[in-house]
Image (cartoon, rainbow, N blue to C red; front, side, top):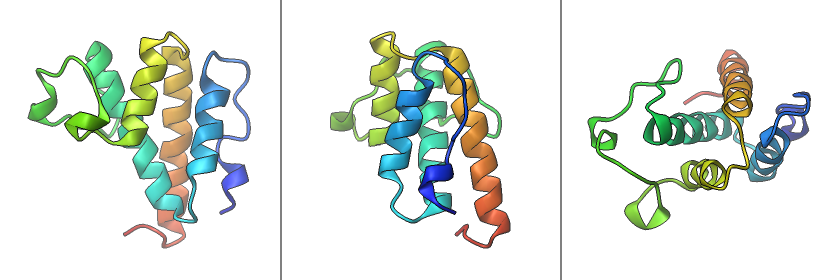
Length: 117
């Protein structure tokens, strides 16, 4: 799958296009890995931010008492990127839900193509 295909549509939802642009730039040829990185990034940030448990995500008990995410604490860069967008008010829940759905579908397609590991 070409990385230009990730989230090619999405409408004008605050933060959606910016998130998808960064995801496209981070795509290194590993379609399934890229999708999983962003699925976890969104899911972890949403859970720490407002307690939302995204579909297909089971939060670690280690996240229960977390108040913020940072790379210094060992959090992934995608998680921290989404966290920063949330803290700055530069992305909406709707945008995160839409991006999560796109990455979930992208992961399913990559798996169907035999690219999962």
